[in-house]
Image (cartoon, rainbow, N blue to C red; front, top):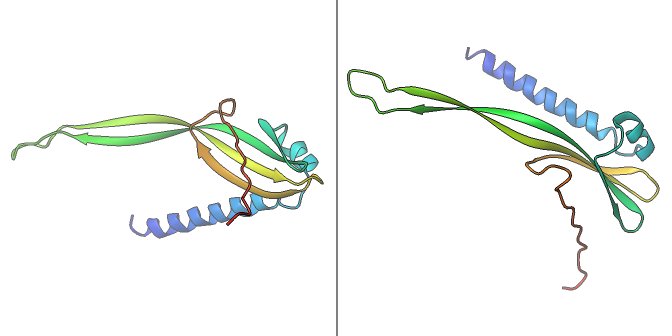
Amino acid sequence: MKKLIPIFAILLLASCTGQKKLMNKWVGSTKENLISDWGMPSKIVEIEPGGEILVFAEEVNFRHSSANIGSASQSQMGNVVQNNIEVRKWQYTIFMVDPEGTIYHLTQKFYSVSPDKINFQLSQKSDKN
């Protein structure tokens, strides 16, 4: 079993790296190519001057297991109760598109808020010091 842990860790890292490379291929691509491949985004937010944020959201369910161990006397083990908790989250893939329709940045995040309830607020940095 201990020999499998390093192999699992290597596979996990390799899959994360592969996913990142796959996603980064979109940087420099066009909005039209993205929509052709992914379909229409869940939300489009216009930003000045003429750019856009394209938001793709997918509901994901996570299952967490936890164990509660009851008190035990010296002669017997305590009771073990295992709880399976399902947590619903949304995986957001967010693409930043410049005024020419070219993707220049993307990010992926998990949030508990559904796309119809999420509010994007953009702020500009102030030049005042």
